[in-house]
Image (tube, rainbow, N blue to C red):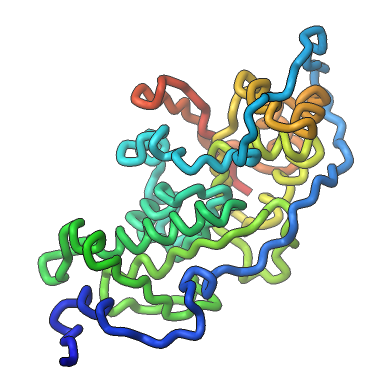
Length: 319
């Protein structure tokens, strides 16, 4: 008996379909550039010199970790995904009708929430393929239960978990940022795409159409710093600038130096980079404004009392 999938789109998942690709995630995954440990030449700054104290002998952790890049699979359990203070600080005008790049998007909770701001398109990138799979699953779950207005049919959370989530349909897979009128308001999620890649070591955009209006780097500077040293982090900041259109925004949540020492013990390479640091987090703003060319337009202190109580700055720069 043929299943009537038009009455309820969840029934469509019960119909067997032939596919050349058994893994639907691979269809949308672009090839990533292998990670390189090459360090960029250092750029001198006219700032008061500092050093990491070498009087204390640091030993590598005895525990093997798969999170050398900060790719924690339970990160949004830690940050309280349903009440993220960073998202509360975001302003609609930063994102409305804008193209957005979220570097180090993790499992995509913040990235998907940005759809509320009527973005033009969002590109989420993370180095961990497992996190990208989780992000795509989260995106399809949110698309499945999203309610836009009384005329749009939507479903309870039990439906995607019992029958599987509804697919996110991409109208133009090559360019998500084309101005396409969406027939169904729920297809706002088709403007969000996740891919696995090491963005730091990918080539720069070749065409103006590949530039972004907004680039976000939330809680990733420590990991870039420990894995790539001072030169690697400076290279990252310069690449962000070159990846933005004129007037574009760079939203940065840097991590303080206090959290570096513990994570530096995850590998000898990270420990060596930590002990060689001369470019400290309190120098980032000066470097971005004086050396890279950004203008600092806003700064906030985000205090998350629910997630083990910590405060981090959130800076908004403009090209």
